[in-house]
Image 1 (spheres, rainbow, N blue to C red):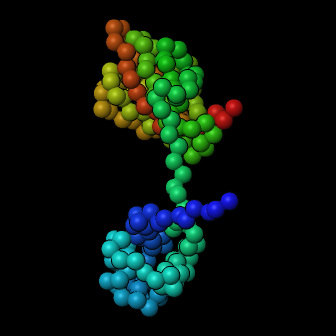
Image 2: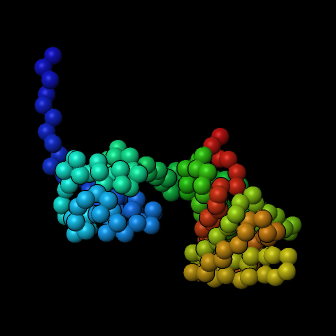
Image 3: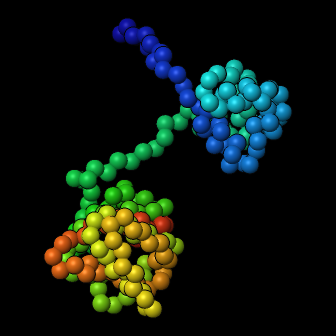
Length: 195
């Protein structure tokens, strides 16, 4: 069988942002990296802006200075897409809400949930907690009351509240005629949805 030659993509490889991010994570200046790699500050700056490409030797040296495995510069970033129509229904709490998990099942770092809450839909009369550090509730449409043991916060479209998931709370759409639409961000994920 005859092999077919592979043509290069001629697409320019962009590694500058990854090098800059590695440098910044370590709190290094461009000058510090340049001195350690024995190149000019301007050269490092142009590499980070993808205006020039270093030789393989220079790139290996820069990666050593940054303690960055060279292969990570060329990895395809992991992306997970959950289409709105494919987002699985879940039951977070309460009644009167159509809740959809927008992050992939098994994502442990955080969960994003879109809820359409019927008029007078509620998280329940009893306050509850979630096993997470933070809950963020952003109101896209309508009004939501977030109920805590000591107070109630009324949120309208565009409002956002952040609190510990371990704080006893509940929620309510106080409107008797209109639905509300909200986004919940829970970090880290409070339960395993991989099943």
